[in-house]
Image: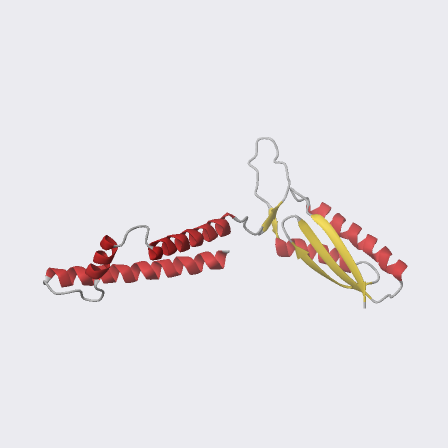
Length: 180
């Protein structure tokens, strides 16, 4: 959403600059009693004065603007992506609390390292979201009982790793172990 916000802000600022230059050019042209310099705004003014609100084109433009505004409102009200996971530490009495947090990448690295240390796990990939941590581990074993055992061990290791981080709200952990 950040990219969309920046793109929309850039487009809006360029449009406002262009509109400002257009207005300046038209004011200068009107000051010298010349016709329209760039845009025949008097024709647009006549059209707007003669066109009733019930006209089809006016309704289409209004509906389009309403839909665009609604889409922007819904897009902006979406919860932003979590960038930091706050640590739940109590401040000592009489001291100011310190804002301590881990990045998503840091949480993923801690969980990945804990799961990769398990004997039998070849590699681990971790995706960290606001409320969930998804671990995808691979093993060389084709034995189903071994894979299930590694699944339980990896889940426990991921939960222990998150517990050691002492996050304010611990995300849900899901682990999937595949054999290669």
